[in-house]
Image (cartoon, rainbow, N blue to C red):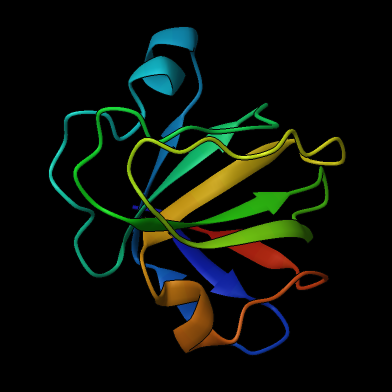
Length: 115
């Protein structure tokens, strides 16, 4: 499984990162699924906004540009919310709530997809 690491801090954000490439994978996302386990994550490609409809848990979201630089973060997004449209984003990584704070990940950091 791909690993996600913060280039600035060296911290690992996810050790079991899954990717949603096609329409149905993106549409389904984390809806009606159990909470992400520690080390888990979902990378949604070609995505500028997200929602948390039909979710029963909070999660962190890091919006990334084409170079993997964080352009917007949401800490502990609750159920039944929608993000703003992030014009500079080309994708988003959804992680268990608290991961972004714990790893010190912030706007301007570059995230590395390894493996």
